Length: 255
Image (cartoon, rainbow, N blue to C red; front, side, top):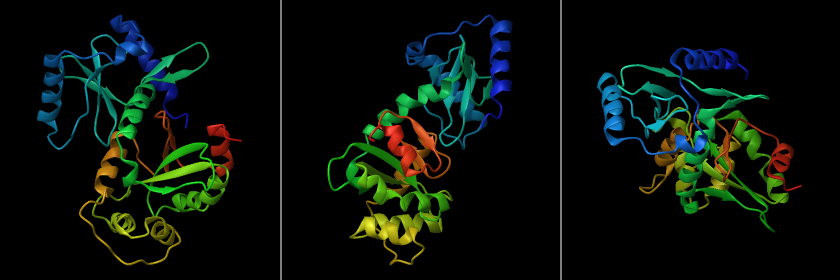
């Protein structure tokens, strides 16, 4: 988990020293980029790799360097002329820790994307009593840890935590796993069907034109999800991988 932290931190320091760049506050990262610069950067990147799709261009903490997310891929740090970039995470070295600036920026992006999702398009397991907290989970029915987490949903519900599922077939749209997810979302009883699939049972194959599986898979990519389960909190914080129910209860502060 600490992989590359030191190297990337040293690289950032080296760039700051060589180029004399100055760090900017987080709010400045959200400022609008000149339209000509933004379109020029996207045009350069797209001309070399027309198969890739890029997100919104925004300033980075390094003057003259812009951050551009690849949809379903890494964040690129691109020179103003669009002719040079490096990828990966950028860290700020503070007196007490390394701060992942890309992740900080993504928190706001995820929160906005999540707020735009219609809850009717999620498969929801809600507590019988008061809802004290909510977790949004990108899931794949053929994922072992997704199944493990699903077995803990009753305990999460008992503790007042609502579980909202979004589809994220790891093998991609059109894969057998994706087809199973479509069957769950198109079922007359989505929650029961999803549970059956996660228990390894076979279910009736179903299709419906308005199923959200492909859209939710793309949504996950935009949020930086690259595996399952992936939990996204309402404030945009991403928690990759499985977490026991007890840990989630403490994390949400609903004890």
